Length: 241
Ligand SMILES: CC(C)(COP(=O)(O)OP(=O)(O)OC[C@H]1O[C@@H](n2cnc3c(N)ncnc32)[C@H](O)[C@@H]1OP(=O)(O)O)[C@@H](O)C(=O)NCCC(=O)NCCS
Image (spheres, rainbow, N blue to C red):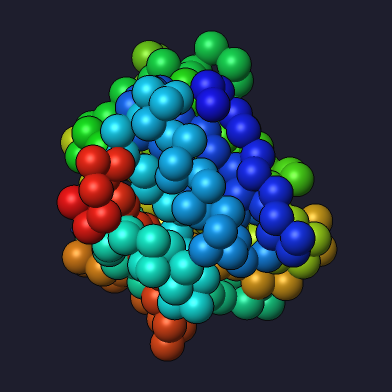
């Protein structure tokens, strides 16, 4: 089971890929319906033979977590889920920074900002960035660039759209440039892009202890949803490891 694999049951599909270039960690994403216990157990029995020693899930709702918890997974990270409509979008500008769609040569600079912004396990590599962009039928990868002579990238955001629904997939600002309004301006740019293409709402999830992101989203009018999400993990040496 190397690379990309789909396990299909009667009413569900489970996609298996390496976790962001780590070929020992399988990343399990339900792509249709809620996987049955039988599919998850089949998947877990195949993973060690394919070189995996642990598995993690995509962010799952409480009810979608049930068959994974029954298969020996436990919570790795709890996430808050926040939403906002797209009726009133603030016009936010940062005087010395331009926001625009990225250009191909800028990928290394984007990944460097990501690496400076997230702990190693959650960082994006080339394939993770590609996956985040491909996670929805259309997406905007926007960068914040200084208007100085060097035109340095100081932040980026990935906003995705599936029909009327928008998703803020990723947001990061160079730690040297925090608290200048760049993160807020990138989010507002994504909101405008979504509205232009007919979306009605945007969803974002963020780790429960990410106070800076939660404060930013609250200020921009996102509302915390009653039920959060969780990423689950299981060692393949045995359940609950
Ligand atoms: C979250 C993040 C994108 C914010 O970027 P930023 O450019 O510093 O944000 P802004 O300057 O637009 O901040 C807007 C408001 O959010 C709140 N905020 C931002 N950072 C904060 C912090 N560290 N503590 C408290 N409030 C904070 C404040 O209300 C701030 O307004 P103020 O500066 O006038 O008080 C940035 O901290 C970051 O890249 N973090 C690491 C990656 C990350 O967590 N991404 C989000 C994952 S969902």
